[in-house]
Length: 453
Image 1 (cartoon, rainbow, N blue to C red):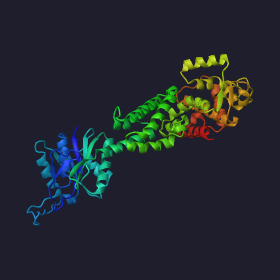
Image 2: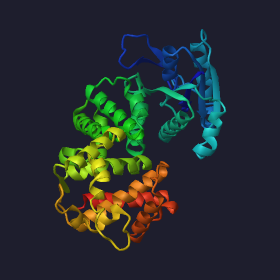
Image 3: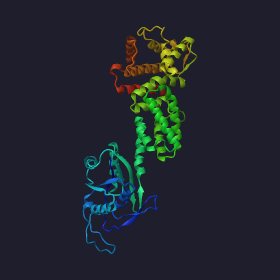
Image 4: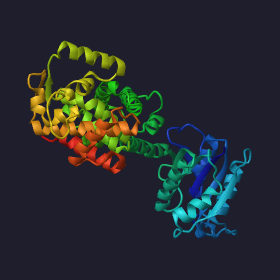
C-alpha cells in the first residue's frame, strides 16, 4: 500500500511570482512558498503526510512547453522553463529529505475519461493505495474529472484520504476533504434507500456517530435491516416504530446535508400517521431494494396483524378450544399471534360449508363463502366482503409463493394443487412458472389493494 497525490498540472504564467501560503485554520504554522499553482498545496500535503511516495500529474502539452518568465522589471529571464520542469524542480527541492517520485501523464482535454485518463492512471495505482487530490490545477472541468476518477478508484479498493485547494486570493491552502466525504454521504443515503445497505452511512459517520440523533437513526436502520434480512418478522413492528421515530428526530440533527436528503425517503416511504413507515410501505421499500424474499416474508407474516390493527376486521375472544390451538401453534412456530389466527382458525372457518368445485380446500371454501363462514364467529368484517376476499386470495397465494421459494410446501399436495388451480382461475400466475417480475407485480397489486381507499 502506498500514499500518492493526483493532480492536473496548471500552466506556468510568464509573470508568476512566488508567494507564501498558510494552511487554513493554522495561521501560526510555518508557511510554504508557491509560484506555479500546484506548488503550495502539494508541499502542504507532503508536509502533513510524509508517507506520500508519488505525485501523479496529468500534464497538458502547454504545461510541458517552455515559457519565458519575466522579471519584476519586465526583462526576460535567460532560461526558459516549462510548468512541469518548474514544478518538478521545486517539489524535489522541498522533499529532498524524504524524496518522492514525480509521474507525469500526458493529458489532452479531448481525451476520454474512461478510455484514456483512467487506463493511464491505473498503470500507477494499485488496490489498497491511499490517494490525496490537489484540486487547484488545470481547467475547471478537470476538477470534475478528478472527482470522477477518485470515485472510480474508490470502487477498486483505493482510499481517497483527502483533498486540498490553493486559494490565490487568501494565500491559504484549504482542506476540501469534506467535499469527498459529501459524495460518500449522498451515496450512503442512496444505498440505503435503494438497497437497504447501511455500510456507507456507518463508514461516513463512524461508530458511534458523534451526533446522538444520527447514531440513533443508524442503529435503528442497522437493526431493522438485519431483522428484515434474517426474516425475524415478530420483531419488525417494534423495529419499524423505533426507526420511524429516529427518522423523524433526525430532521433536527446537526448535519444539514442529511437533513436535506432524508425528506425524500420520508416522502416516498413514510406516509403513515406522523410520517411513520407503515407495514405496506416497508414491504414496498423491500421490493424497491430488491429484497423480494424479505418482502414476501413480511407480507405473509405481518399483513394479518396490519389488517387487525387497521380494523379491516375485528377479532373478538376466540372459543376456548380455538384459543388453545392458536396458543400451541404460536409457541411452536414463534409466529405473530394474528398470523397464526388467520392460518389456523379464520381461514378454516369454512371447513364444514359446501362448495361444488373445491370441496376439499378449506381456505377456498372460507373465501368463497366468507360471510357464511364468519357468521356467528368472533370475526367481524369492517370492509366490503369482496374486498376482503381479494385480500385473502392475495395472502394465501403469496404465502404459497414464499413457501415454494423456501422449499417449505405443506404435505397435502392434492389440496395445494387444488388451491393453486383456484388462484390461477382468479388471475394469479401458476406458481411453478412464476418469475421475479410476476412476484413484484402480484405484491405491488396486493399492497395497492390494502392501501387504496
